[in-house]
Image (cartoon, rainbow, N blue to C red; front, side, top):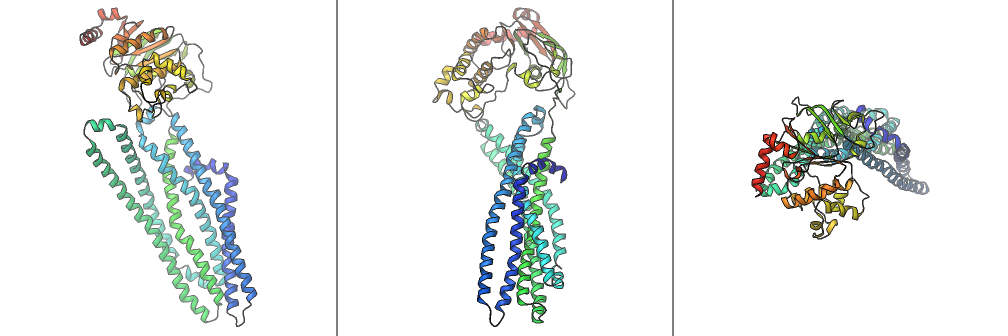
Length: 576
């Protein structure tokens, strides 16, 4: 448990004073609760006399009432402080987890699903919160109250105390066996919750495709099966969890039965007074709470431990990139140089790029090639989404591995092949990367991307909410909003990865015309399956199986490269 505790240890230190005052309040409640049976003993013994003193009885009643009010106030204090601490811990741990996830790269997200990460941020964090809130209070209260009640019972009658404790070993053995199974089942339930969450998220994100293929019933059936498996294992968990409380209660009642049998004889034999007997039973009830709480507390800590282990796996994940302590910076990028660039994705030995040598200068560099030829991979490497060995990519004369990630990416506007839009307004999506952009700047970028008029025709213009992943927009509209997002950044390097595939020819020509002036003096890498956007490129390269098999201008490649010439003629035929 100690290795997992290291994750939350800083928060116990940060909120030490809050916890300290809360614990003092818990201990004070326990102390005052222990005083009440002593007052009851005195009151019962006084009532047992032939002429009880009413003044003494009244004082004892007032004392018990004041203690009850004081206990209520102190309970409010410890709940506010300690349960409040558990909520603060949950908030800070969630923020830390989210911030850490943002530092991880693509390799991590290829291994962990979004549903699994969402489950960690909900169910698992809640389990940790319960363990560090009610778990801490209940365990502390049970230990202190149990020991104190036990001492008071021994003080009243040691032999009767031993008899009352005879059933206790059964509780220890039963709790140990049940909690082992409890931990295994809770881990299984959390994993199944992750799978259920991921399935639900994936189905909602793909709702249009599901409807287009009439797969509503299929997905409902699959979701129902996963839900039943989740519920079935929750029933198993509830069975084990539910067994702990009846076991504790049965053992507590067995102890009470023994006390009534043996203690009643002691009262008859006048070895203890009726007041002592009543006080002993009251202390036994106080001891019963720790007995019953034991299973619950163990359950909370077991859940918290499993959840912390799952969270720890995320914190142990590290990005593939490792920046030097003093990264170099580059002011103005004049050229990008690729030297014998070869690359295979992490965990794979198959090369996606092979000995690529290329010097990229201001102007448009066009890239064409068959699907899987390495075009998108090259874009990913230039934007540092995957690491490469040293000496392969240079920005000016700086090795890419010696440059700071944030500094390098601040020079690049990347429009990926797969457009990612947020469920927010159009303006918010265009401003991504430049949150302080004015509406005039946003509109200028939208005009260059030939999307402004279509936005203004929408109900709320730039404040129109576009839904999950831009579901209310067409494919071409999403691509042009992503292009406007990149144009707004006004950066010296622009990488456009096949971002006109869903745009019609006429609109595409307008976009190319608008980009001509904007791209003057900038480095632009334009990946496209269409030849039309590449005609004005300074240089075009043809990739095949990760290697450059052709390079030159549009006219040169028409004569020299069979693949380029073939797709160019085919697209001309399709156009007319």
